[in-house]
Image 1 (cartoon, rainbow, N blue to C red):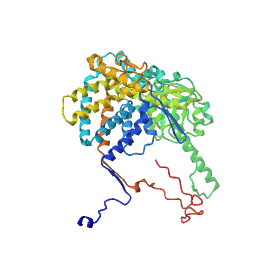
Image 2: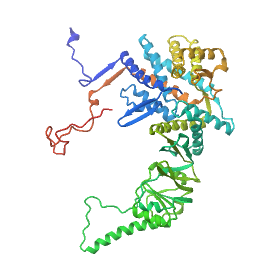
Image 3: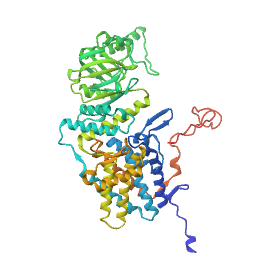
Image 4: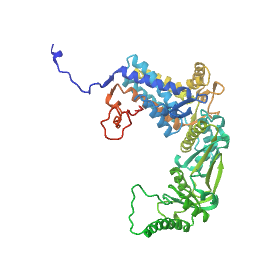
Length: 565
Protein backbone atom coordinates (compact mmCIF):
# COMPACT_ATOMS: atom_id res chain seq x y z
CA UNK A 1 0.00 0.00 0.00
CA UNK A 2 2.94 2.34 0.61
CA UNK A 3 3.52 2.98 -3.09
CA UNK A 4 -0.01 4.40 -3.41
CA UNK A 5 0.59 6.88 -0.59
CA UNK A 6 3.66 8.51 -2.18
CA UNK A 7 3.09 12.14 -3.20
CA UNK A 8 2.95 12.82 -6.95
CA UNK A 9 6.07 14.60 -8.27
CA UNK A 10 5.32 17.32 -10.82
CA UNK A 11 8.30 18.37 -12.96
CA UNK A 12 6.64 20.21 -15.83
CA UNK A 13 3.79 22.67 -16.18
CA UNK A 14 0.29 21.32 -16.50
CA UNK A 15 -0.57 20.66 -20.14
CA UNK A 16 3.02 20.03 -21.26
CA UNK A 17 3.15 17.30 -23.91
CA UNK A 18 5.94 14.71 -23.51
CA UNK A 19 6.61 11.91 -25.95
CA UNK A 20 9.48 9.52 -25.41
CA UNK A 21 11.01 6.17 -26.22
CA UNK A 22 11.08 4.17 -29.42
CA UNK A 23 7.65 5.45 -30.63
CA UNK A 24 9.03 9.00 -30.52
CA UNK A 25 12.02 8.10 -32.72
CA UNK A 26 9.78 6.32 -35.22
CA UNK A 27 7.39 9.30 -35.20
CA UNK A 28 10.27 11.63 -36.09
CA UNK A 29 11.40 9.28 -38.86
CA UNK A 30 7.88 9.19 -40.33
CA UNK A 31 7.77 13.01 -40.38
CA UNK A 32 11.11 13.12 -42.23
CA UNK A 33 9.90 10.48 -44.69
CA UNK A 34 6.95 12.70 -45.60
CA UNK A 35 9.33 15.55 -46.44
CA UNK A 36 11.64 13.30 -48.47
CA UNK A 37 8.72 12.01 -50.56
CA UNK A 38 8.04 15.59 -51.70
CA UNK A 39 11.55 16.36 -53.00
CA UNK A 40 12.48 12.87 -54.19
CA UNK A 41 10.83 13.31 -57.58
CA UNK A 42 12.98 16.38 -58.36
CA UNK A 43 16.28 14.42 -58.46
CA UNK A 44 18.14 14.08 -61.73
CA UNK A 45 17.93 15.45 -65.29
CA UNK A 46 14.41 14.07 -65.71
CA UNK A 47 13.22 15.17 -62.28
CA UNK A 48 9.91 16.99 -62.01
CA UNK A 49 9.45 20.62 -60.95
CA UNK A 50 7.43 21.86 -57.99
CA UNK A 51 5.03 24.79 -58.13
CA UNK A 52 4.83 26.43 -54.71
CA UNK A 53 2.36 29.23 -54.05
CA UNK A 54 3.02 31.39 -51.03
CA UNK A 55 0.62 34.33 -50.59
CA UNK A 56 0.73 36.09 -53.97
CA UNK A 57 4.13 34.69 -54.92
CA UNK A 58 4.47 31.68 -57.21
CA UNK A 59 7.74 29.72 -57.44
CA UNK A 60 8.49 26.99 -59.97
CA UNK A 61 11.67 25.09 -59.13
CA UNK A 62 13.31 21.70 -58.76
CA UNK A 63 16.16 22.99 -56.60
CA UNK A 64 16.11 20.98 -53.38
CA UNK A 65 17.15 23.84 -51.09
CA UNK A 66 14.53 26.20 -52.55
CA UNK A 67 11.75 23.60 -52.24
CA UNK A 68 12.68 22.82 -48.63
CA UNK A 69 12.83 26.51 -47.75
CA UNK A 70 9.49 27.33 -49.37
CA UNK A 71 7.64 24.45 -47.68
CA UNK A 72 7.72 26.23 -44.28
CA UNK A 73 8.08 22.95 -42.38
CA UNK A 74 7.11 23.23 -38.70
CA UNK A 75 7.89 19.73 -37.41
CA UNK A 76 11.04 20.14 -35.26
CA UNK A 77 12.72 16.90 -36.41
CA UNK A 78 11.85 17.36 -40.08
CA UNK A 79 13.35 20.85 -39.99
CA UNK A 80 16.75 19.21 -39.53
CA UNK A 81 16.47 18.09 -43.17
CA UNK A 82 15.80 21.71 -44.14
CA UNK A 83 18.95 22.76 -42.29
CA UNK A 84 21.22 20.21 -44.01
CA UNK A 85 19.78 21.18 -47.38
CA UNK A 86 20.58 24.86 -46.71
CA UNK A 87 24.04 23.95 -45.43
CA UNK A 88 24.76 21.93 -48.58
CA UNK A 89 23.58 24.84 -50.73
CA UNK A 90 25.76 27.34 -48.86
CA UNK A 91 28.80 25.08 -48.77
CA UNK A 92 28.97 23.70 -52.31
CA UNK A 93 25.85 24.86 -54.15
CA UNK A 94 24.78 21.46 -55.51
CA UNK A 95 23.57 18.14 -54.12
CA UNK A 96 20.79 19.71 -52.06
CA UNK A 97 18.22 17.12 -53.15
CA UNK A 98 20.68 14.21 -52.93
CA UNK A 99 21.52 14.96 -49.29
CA UNK A 100 17.84 14.97 -48.27
CA UNK A 101 17.04 11.78 -50.21
CA UNK A 102 20.08 10.00 -48.77
CA UNK A 103 19.21 11.06 -45.20
CA UNK A 104 15.65 9.86 -45.73
CA UNK A 105 16.82 6.43 -46.94
CA UNK A 106 19.21 6.04 -43.98
CA UNK A 107 16.32 6.82 -41.63
CA UNK A 108 14.12 4.32 -43.46
CA UNK A 109 16.69 1.54 -42.93
CA UNK A 110 17.13 2.59 -39.29
CA UNK A 111 13.37 2.37 -38.73
CA UNK A 112 13.42 -1.34 -39.65
CA UNK A 113 16.24 -1.95 -37.17
CA UNK A 114 14.35 -0.14 -34.39
CA UNK A 115 11.20 -2.17 -35.03
CA UNK A 116 13.29 -5.36 -34.85
CA UNK A 117 14.62 -4.38 -31.41
CA UNK A 118 18.06 -2.92 -32.20
CA UNK A 119 18.82 0.10 -30.02
CA UNK A 120 19.52 3.52 -31.55
CA UNK A 121 23.12 3.89 -30.21
CA UNK A 122 24.17 0.73 -32.07
CA UNK A 123 22.70 2.08 -35.31
CA UNK A 124 24.41 5.45 -34.80
CA UNK A 125 27.77 3.77 -34.17
CA UNK A 126 27.45 1.66 -37.33
CA UNK A 127 26.37 4.61 -39.49
CA UNK A 128 29.30 6.75 -38.36
CA UNK A 129 31.77 3.95 -39.03
CA UNK A 130 30.28 3.38 -42.49
CA UNK A 131 30.40 7.12 -43.26
CA UNK A 132 34.09 7.34 -42.35
CA UNK A 133 34.90 4.34 -44.55
CA UNK A 134 32.85 5.75 -47.44
CA UNK A 135 34.51 9.20 -47.29
CA UNK A 136 37.97 7.62 -47.16
CA UNK A 137 37.19 5.43 -50.18
CA UNK A 138 35.67 8.42 -51.97
CA UNK A 139 38.89 10.44 -51.68
CA UNK A 140 40.98 7.44 -52.73
CA UNK A 141 38.89 6.96 -55.90
CA UNK A 142 38.73 10.63 -56.90
CA UNK A 143 40.57 11.59 -60.08
CA UNK A 144 42.85 14.61 -59.59
CA UNK A 145 43.06 16.91 -62.62
CA UNK A 146 45.56 19.26 -60.99
CA UNK A 147 48.38 18.58 -63.44
CA UNK A 148 46.27 19.25 -66.52
CA UNK A 149 46.87 22.23 -68.80
CA UNK A 150 44.84 25.44 -68.51
CA UNK A 151 42.63 24.44 -71.45
CA UNK A 152 41.98 20.99 -69.98
CA UNK A 153 41.14 22.50 -66.59
CA UNK A 154 38.70 24.92 -68.21
CA UNK A 155 37.11 22.02 -70.09
CA UNK A 156 36.84 20.09 -66.80
CA UNK A 157 35.12 23.03 -65.08
CA UNK A 158 32.64 23.36 -67.94
CA UNK A 159 31.83 19.63 -67.68
CA UNK A 160 31.21 19.96 -63.93
CA UNK A 161 28.93 22.95 -64.52
CA UNK A 162 27.02 21.06 -67.24
CA UNK A 163 26.46 18.14 -64.85
CA UNK A 164 24.97 20.56 -62.33
CA UNK A 165 22.73 22.21 -64.95
CA UNK A 166 21.54 18.84 -66.31
CA UNK A 167 18.82 18.65 -63.67
CA UNK A 168 17.76 22.30 -63.93
CA UNK A 169 15.06 24.06 -65.90
CA UNK A 170 17.75 25.51 -68.20
CA UNK A 171 19.17 22.06 -69.10
CA UNK A 172 18.54 22.70 -72.81
CA UNK A 173 21.02 25.60 -72.64
CA UNK A 174 23.53 23.91 -70.30
CA UNK A 175 26.60 24.49 -72.50
CA UNK A 176 25.74 28.18 -72.89
CA UNK A 177 25.27 28.75 -69.16
CA UNK A 178 28.15 26.44 -68.13
CA UNK A 179 30.58 28.49 -70.23
CA UNK A 180 29.13 31.68 -68.72
CA UNK A 181 29.63 30.28 -65.20
CA UNK A 182 33.28 29.44 -65.86
CA UNK A 183 33.89 32.90 -67.38
CA UNK A 184 32.32 34.53 -64.30
CA UNK A 185 34.56 32.58 -61.92
CA UNK A 186 37.64 33.49 -64.00
CA UNK A 187 36.70 37.18 -63.61
CA UNK A 188 36.38 36.78 -59.83
CA UNK A 189 39.66 34.98 -59.34
CA UNK A 190 40.32 32.34 -56.69
CA UNK A 191 39.53 34.56 -53.70
CA UNK A 192 36.43 36.23 -55.13
CA UNK A 193 33.17 35.92 -53.22
CA UNK A 194 29.69 35.32 -54.61
CA UNK A 195 28.69 38.86 -53.61
CA UNK A 196 30.97 40.13 -56.38
CA UNK A 197 28.60 38.63 -58.97
CA UNK A 198 25.40 40.54 -59.62
CA UNK A 199 22.30 39.14 -61.29
CA UNK A 200 19.99 41.44 -63.24
CA UNK A 201 16.71 39.91 -64.42
CA UNK A 202 15.27 41.47 -67.58
CA UNK A 203 11.94 40.12 -68.79
CA UNK A 204 11.68 39.63 -72.54
CA UNK A 205 13.93 38.32 -75.27
CA UNK A 206 15.42 34.86 -75.62
CA UNK A 207 17.33 32.95 -72.97
CA UNK A 208 20.39 33.04 -75.24
CA UNK A 209 20.26 36.86 -75.08
CA UNK A 210 21.59 36.53 -71.54
CA UNK A 211 25.10 37.87 -71.21
CA UNK A 212 28.02 38.15 -68.84
CA UNK A 213 29.39 41.66 -68.37
CA UNK A 214 32.92 41.99 -66.98
CA UNK A 215 32.14 44.91 -64.74
CA UNK A 216 29.10 46.46 -63.10
CA UNK A 217 25.61 46.86 -64.52
CA UNK A 218 22.81 48.56 -62.60
CA UNK A 219 19.33 49.60 -63.52
CA UNK A 220 18.66 53.29 -64.22
CA UNK A 221 17.70 54.88 -60.91
CA UNK A 222 14.86 57.29 -60.21
CA UNK A 223 15.75 60.63 -61.80
CA UNK A 224 14.46 64.15 -62.37
CA UNK A 225 13.90 66.14 -65.56
CA UNK A 226 17.48 67.37 -65.96
CA UNK A 227 18.72 63.77 -66.17
CA UNK A 228 18.00 63.49 -69.90
CA UNK A 229 20.38 66.39 -70.61
CA UNK A 230 23.30 64.55 -69.00
CA UNK A 231 25.86 62.69 -71.17
CA UNK A 232 25.31 58.90 -71.21
CA UNK A 233 28.73 57.75 -72.43
CA UNK A 234 32.25 58.31 -71.06
CA UNK A 235 35.71 56.96 -71.81
CA UNK A 236 38.19 56.77 -68.91
CA UNK A 237 35.57 58.15 -66.53
CA UNK A 238 36.35 59.28 -62.99
CA UNK A 239 33.82 57.83 -60.54
CA UNK A 240 32.77 59.41 -57.24
CA UNK A 241 30.74 57.29 -54.80
CA UNK A 242 28.72 59.03 -52.08
CA UNK A 243 26.56 58.14 -49.15
CA UNK A 244 25.11 61.62 -49.00
CA UNK A 245 21.90 63.47 -49.86
CA UNK A 246 22.16 66.16 -52.53
CA UNK A 247 18.80 67.89 -52.30
CA UNK A 248 17.03 70.63 -50.39
CA UNK A 249 15.61 68.96 -47.31
CA UNK A 250 12.02 69.53 -46.30
CA UNK A 251 11.49 70.66 -42.71
CA UNK A 252 10.79 67.94 -40.22
CA UNK A 253 7.50 67.74 -38.36
CA UNK A 254 7.04 70.42 -35.72
CA UNK A 255 10.14 72.31 -36.89
CA UNK A 256 10.00 75.94 -35.78
CA UNK A 257 12.12 78.94 -36.70
CA UNK A 258 11.38 82.24 -34.90
CA UNK A 259 12.24 85.48 -36.63
CA UNK A 260 11.71 89.12 -35.71
CA UNK A 261 12.11 90.57 -39.20
CA UNK A 262 10.66 89.22 -42.51
CA UNK A 263 14.04 89.79 -44.16
CA UNK A 264 15.52 87.17 -41.88
CA UNK A 265 13.40 84.49 -43.54
CA UNK A 266 15.11 85.13 -46.87
CA UNK A 267 18.51 84.81 -45.20
CA UNK A 268 17.52 81.35 -43.91
CA UNK A 269 16.43 80.24 -47.41
CA UNK A 270 19.64 81.67 -48.91
CA UNK A 271 21.70 79.74 -46.36
CA UNK A 272 20.07 76.44 -47.41
CA UNK A 273 20.80 77.15 -51.07
CA UNK A 274 24.37 78.19 -50.38
CA UNK A 275 25.01 74.94 -48.47
CA UNK A 276 23.88 72.69 -51.33
CA UNK A 277 25.64 74.82 -53.96
CA UNK A 278 28.84 74.55 -51.94
CA UNK A 279 28.54 70.75 -51.98
CA UNK A 280 27.88 70.70 -55.73
CA UNK A 281 30.80 73.04 -56.47
CA UNK A 282 33.18 70.80 -54.49
CA UNK A 283 31.99 67.74 -56.44
CA UNK A 284 32.42 69.51 -59.79
CA UNK A 285 35.95 70.64 -58.83
CA UNK A 286 36.95 67.07 -57.90
CA UNK A 287 37.04 66.14 -61.60
CA UNK A 288 34.48 63.33 -61.35
CA UNK A 289 32.48 62.45 -64.50
CA UNK A 290 30.15 59.94 -62.85
CA UNK A 291 28.57 60.60 -59.45
CA UNK A 292 26.67 57.82 -57.68
CA UNK A 293 24.99 58.13 -54.31
CA UNK A 294 23.25 55.71 -51.98
CA UNK A 295 20.84 58.53 -51.05
CA UNK A 296 18.70 60.84 -53.14
CA UNK A 297 20.05 63.34 -55.67
CA UNK A 298 17.41 66.06 -56.11
CA UNK A 299 16.25 68.03 -59.15
CA UNK A 300 18.52 70.99 -58.40
CA UNK A 301 21.64 68.78 -58.26
CA UNK A 302 20.56 66.83 -61.34
CA UNK A 303 20.26 69.99 -63.43
CA UNK A 304 23.53 71.35 -61.98
CA UNK A 305 25.38 68.20 -63.09
CA UNK A 306 23.70 68.23 -66.50
CA UNK A 307 24.96 71.79 -67.14
CA UNK A 308 28.51 70.58 -66.43
CA UNK A 309 28.38 67.31 -68.42
CA UNK A 310 28.44 65.10 -65.32
CA UNK A 311 26.36 61.91 -65.03
CA UNK A 312 24.64 61.31 -61.69
CA UNK A 313 22.57 58.48 -60.19
CA UNK A 314 20.83 58.62 -56.82
CA UNK A 315 19.24 55.94 -54.64
CA UNK A 316 21.67 53.28 -55.95
CA UNK A 317 21.21 49.86 -54.35
CA UNK A 318 23.73 48.97 -51.65
CA UNK A 319 24.89 45.83 -53.52
CA UNK A 320 25.44 47.76 -56.75
CA UNK A 321 27.35 50.51 -54.95
CA UNK A 322 29.57 47.94 -53.22
CA UNK A 323 30.35 46.10 -56.47
CA UNK A 324 31.11 49.44 -58.16
CA UNK A 325 33.52 50.22 -55.33
CA UNK A 326 35.33 46.94 -55.88
CA UNK A 327 35.47 47.34 -59.66
CA UNK A 328 36.60 50.97 -59.83
CA UNK A 329 38.70 51.11 -56.63
CA UNK A 330 36.72 54.17 -55.50
CA UNK A 331 36.09 54.96 -51.83
CA UNK A 332 32.56 55.74 -50.63
CA UNK A 333 32.47 59.26 -49.18
CA UNK A 334 30.11 60.54 -46.50
CA UNK A 335 31.14 64.16 -47.04
CA UNK A 336 32.27 66.23 -50.01
CA UNK A 337 34.81 68.17 -47.99
CA UNK A 338 38.42 67.40 -48.90
CA UNK A 339 37.82 65.07 -51.86
CA UNK A 340 41.21 64.05 -53.24
CA UNK A 341 42.01 62.26 -56.55
CA UNK A 342 42.91 59.03 -54.74
CA UNK A 343 39.30 58.49 -53.53
CA UNK A 344 37.97 58.62 -57.11
CA UNK A 345 37.57 55.39 -59.05
CA UNK A 346 38.40 54.83 -62.70
CA UNK A 347 36.29 53.15 -65.35
CA UNK A 348 37.51 52.46 -68.87
CA UNK A 349 34.09 52.77 -70.47
CA UNK A 350 30.73 53.94 -69.11
CA UNK A 351 27.52 53.76 -71.14
CA UNK A 352 23.77 53.69 -70.66
CA UNK A 353 21.89 51.15 -72.82
CA UNK A 354 18.30 50.15 -73.39
CA UNK A 355 17.65 46.48 -72.57
CA UNK A 356 14.08 45.30 -72.83
CA UNK A 357 11.77 47.91 -71.34
CA UNK A 358 14.37 49.41 -69.02
CA UNK A 359 17.64 51.29 -69.27
CA UNK A 360 20.82 49.99 -67.66
CA UNK A 361 24.15 51.63 -66.88
CA UNK A 362 27.25 49.64 -67.89
CA UNK A 363 30.67 50.15 -66.31
CA UNK A 364 33.28 48.03 -68.09
CA UNK A 365 37.04 47.88 -68.66
CA UNK A 366 37.67 48.68 -65.01
CA UNK A 367 41.36 48.29 -64.08
CA UNK A 368 40.66 46.44 -60.82
CA UNK A 369 37.69 44.52 -62.13
CA UNK A 370 37.06 41.53 -59.90
CA UNK A 371 33.30 41.82 -60.32
CA UNK A 372 30.91 40.57 -62.94
CA UNK A 373 27.23 41.02 -63.73
CA UNK A 374 25.00 38.46 -65.42
CA UNK A 375 22.00 39.79 -67.35
CA UNK A 376 19.39 37.03 -67.48
CA UNK A 377 16.75 37.27 -70.21
CA UNK A 378 13.64 35.16 -70.70
CA UNK A 379 9.88 35.17 -71.11
CA UNK A 380 8.17 34.33 -67.81
CA UNK A 381 9.48 35.85 -64.59
CA UNK A 382 9.31 32.43 -62.89
CA UNK A 383 11.65 31.01 -65.54
CA UNK A 384 14.11 33.87 -65.02
CA UNK A 385 14.05 33.31 -61.24
CA UNK A 386 14.80 29.61 -61.73
CA UNK A 387 17.55 30.44 -64.22
CA UNK A 388 19.19 32.64 -61.59
CA UNK A 389 19.05 29.85 -58.98
CA UNK A 390 20.51 27.41 -61.53
CA UNK A 391 23.34 29.80 -62.42
CA UNK A 392 24.07 30.39 -58.75
CA UNK A 393 24.45 26.63 -58.16
CA UNK A 394 26.59 26.28 -61.29
CA UNK A 395 28.95 29.10 -60.29
CA UNK A 396 29.29 27.69 -56.75
CA UNK A 397 30.27 24.30 -58.19
CA UNK A 398 32.83 25.85 -60.56
CA UNK A 399 34.39 27.83 -57.69
CA UNK A 400 34.70 24.68 -55.57
CA UNK A 401 36.04 22.60 -58.47
CA UNK A 402 38.60 25.30 -59.32
CA UNK A 403 40.02 25.09 -55.78
CA UNK A 404 39.66 21.32 -55.34
CA UNK A 405 40.42 19.73 -58.71
CA UNK A 406 39.40 16.19 -57.69
CA UNK A 407 36.32 14.86 -59.49
CA UNK A 408 34.28 11.65 -59.49
CA UNK A 409 31.73 10.16 -61.87
CA UNK A 410 28.13 11.26 -61.42
CA UNK A 411 24.89 9.53 -62.31
CA UNK A 412 24.92 7.36 -59.18
CA UNK A 413 28.24 5.70 -60.17
CA UNK A 414 30.15 6.74 -57.06
CA UNK A 415 27.27 5.66 -54.77
CA UNK A 416 27.21 2.19 -56.38
CA UNK A 417 30.97 1.77 -55.99
CA UNK A 418 30.87 2.90 -52.34
CA UNK A 419 27.96 0.52 -51.74
CA UNK A 420 29.98 -2.38 -53.19
CA UNK A 421 33.00 -1.47 -51.07
CA UNK A 422 30.97 -1.26 -47.83
CA UNK A 423 29.27 -4.61 -48.51
CA UNK A 424 32.67 -6.26 -48.92
CA UNK A 425 33.93 -4.61 -45.75
CA UNK A 426 30.84 -5.75 -43.81
CA UNK A 427 31.73 -9.41 -44.59
CA UNK A 428 35.03 -8.98 -42.75
CA UNK A 429 33.47 -8.04 -39.39
CA UNK A 430 31.05 -9.74 -37.01
CA UNK A 431 28.14 -8.75 -34.82
CA UNK A 432 25.40 -6.20 -35.21
CA UNK A 433 27.70 -3.66 -36.85
CA UNK A 434 27.91 -5.95 -39.88
CA UNK A 435 24.17 -5.59 -40.43
CA UNK A 436 24.16 -1.83 -39.89
CA UNK A 437 27.03 -1.17 -42.32
CA UNK A 438 25.45 -3.53 -44.85
CA UNK A 439 22.20 -1.57 -44.74
CA UNK A 440 24.09 1.74 -44.95
CA UNK A 441 25.52 0.36 -48.20
CA UNK A 442 22.02 -0.50 -49.37
CA UNK A 443 20.79 3.01 -48.55
CA UNK A 444 23.43 4.51 -50.86
CA UNK A 445 21.73 2.76 -53.78
CA UNK A 446 18.73 5.06 -53.41
CA UNK A 447 20.48 7.69 -55.58
CA UNK A 448 20.83 5.55 -58.76
CA UNK A 449 17.45 3.96 -58.07
CA UNK A 450 15.71 7.36 -57.84
CA UNK A 451 17.55 8.64 -60.93
CA UNK A 452 16.33 5.63 -62.90
CA UNK A 453 12.74 5.89 -61.64
CA UNK A 454 12.54 9.64 -62.32
CA UNK A 455 13.82 8.98 -65.87
CA UNK A 456 11.00 6.50 -66.52
CA UNK A 457 13.27 3.45 -66.51
CA UNK A 458 12.86 0.17 -64.63
CA UNK A 459 14.72 0.98 -61.44
CA UNK A 460 15.22 -2.66 -60.36
CA UNK A 461 16.59 -3.67 -63.76
CA UNK A 462 19.01 -0.70 -63.90
CA UNK A 463 20.18 -1.38 -60.35
CA UNK A 464 20.88 -5.05 -61.10
CA UNK A 465 22.88 -4.10 -64.18
CA UNK A 466 24.93 -1.61 -62.16
CA UNK A 467 25.57 -4.15 -59.39
CA UNK A 468 26.83 -6.61 -62.01
CA UNK A 469 29.13 -4.02 -63.63
CA UNK A 470 30.63 -2.88 -60.34
CA UNK A 471 31.07 -6.45 -59.04
CA UNK A 472 32.64 -8.05 -62.13
CA UNK A 473 34.31 -5.32 -64.21
CA UNK A 474 36.88 -4.38 -61.56
CA UNK A 475 38.48 -0.91 -61.72
CA UNK A 476 37.17 -0.42 -65.26
CA UNK A 477 33.58 -0.73 -64.09
CA UNK A 478 33.67 1.61 -61.10
CA UNK A 479 32.36 4.61 -63.05
CA UNK A 480 29.24 2.93 -64.45
CA UNK A 481 26.11 4.88 -63.56
CA UNK A 482 22.61 5.68 -64.78
CA UNK A 483 22.17 7.15 -68.25
CA UNK A 484 19.02 9.17 -67.59
CA UNK A 485 18.58 10.14 -71.26
CA UNK A 486 18.72 6.66 -72.79
CA UNK A 487 17.33 4.89 -69.67
CA UNK A 488 20.29 2.52 -69.49
CA UNK A 489 23.73 2.29 -67.87
CA UNK A 490 26.90 4.00 -69.12
CA UNK A 491 30.45 4.93 -68.13
CA UNK A 492 29.71 8.32 -66.62
CA UNK A 493 33.35 9.39 -66.43
CA UNK A 494 33.93 8.66 -70.11
CA UNK A 495 30.73 10.56 -70.92
CA UNK A 496 31.94 13.61 -68.93
CA UNK A 497 29.26 13.34 -66.25
CA UNK A 498 31.59 14.67 -63.55
CA UNK A 499 30.98 15.99 -60.08
CA UNK A 500 33.50 17.63 -57.71
CA UNK A 501 34.42 15.31 -54.87
CA UNK A 502 33.50 18.03 -52.33
CA UNK A 503 29.83 17.66 -53.32
CA UNK A 504 29.73 13.96 -52.45
CA UNK A 505 31.94 14.39 -49.40
CA UNK A 506 29.66 17.10 -47.97
CA UNK A 507 26.48 15.17 -48.83
CA UNK A 508 27.65 11.94 -47.14
CA UNK A 509 28.76 13.70 -43.97
CA UNK A 510 25.68 15.94 -43.73
CA UNK A 511 23.19 13.11 -44.37
CA UNK A 512 24.88 10.81 -41.83
CA UNK A 513 25.10 13.51 -39.15
CA UNK A 514 21.44 14.48 -39.64
CA UNK A 515 20.38 10.82 -39.42
CA UNK A 516 22.39 10.23 -36.25
CA UNK A 517 20.97 13.41 -34.72
CA UNK A 518 17.38 12.36 -35.41
CA UNK A 519 18.01 8.82 -34.11
CA UNK A 520 19.50 10.19 -30.89
CA UNK A 521 16.28 12.09 -30.01
CA UNK A 522 14.14 9.82 -27.82
CA UNK A 523 12.01 12.44 -26.13
CA UNK A 524 10.21 15.60 -27.19
CA UNK A 525 8.95 18.08 -24.63
CA UNK A 526 6.45 20.57 -25.99
CA UNK A 527 5.23 23.41 -23.82
CA UNK A 528 1.80 24.71 -24.92
CA UNK A 529 2.83 28.22 -23.81
CA UNK A 530 5.51 28.29 -26.55
CA UNK A 531 2.86 27.83 -29.25
CA UNK A 532 1.03 31.00 -28.24
CA UNK A 533 1.84 34.13 -30.25
CA UNK A 534 4.46 36.38 -28.73
CA UNK A 535 4.32 40.15 -28.54
CA UNK A 536 1.00 41.55 -29.71
CA UNK A 537 -1.78 42.04 -27.18
CA UNK A 538 -5.38 41.45 -28.25
CA UNK A 539 -6.90 44.54 -29.79
CA UNK A 540 -8.54 46.67 -27.16
CA UNK A 541 -10.21 49.55 -28.91
CA UNK A 542 -12.80 52.19 -28.39
CA UNK A 543 -15.44 50.33 -30.35
CA UNK A 544 -17.88 47.85 -28.97
CA UNK A 545 -16.35 44.75 -27.51
CA UNK A 546 -13.15 44.94 -25.48
CA UNK A 547 -13.19 48.67 -24.96
CA UNK A 548 -11.04 48.99 -21.88
CA UNK A 549 -7.98 50.34 -23.64
CA UNK A 550 -7.48 54.07 -24.13
CA UNK A 551 -5.46 53.73 -27.32
CA UNK A 552 -6.87 53.68 -30.82
CA UNK A 553 -8.35 50.26 -31.43
CA UNK A 554 -9.37 48.40 -34.51
CA UNK A 555 -13.08 49.20 -34.15
CA UNK A 556 -15.69 46.88 -32.62
CA UNK A 557 -12.98 45.14 -30.65
CA UNK A 558 -11.66 43.28 -33.70
CA UNK A 559 -8.95 40.76 -32.86
CA UNK A 560 -5.79 41.03 -35.00
CA UNK A 561 -5.05 38.15 -37.36
CA UNK A 562 -2.32 35.84 -36.10
CA UNK A 563 -0.39 33.94 -38.75
CA UNK A 564 1.21 30.71 -37.54
CA UNK A 565 4.50 29.89 -39.19
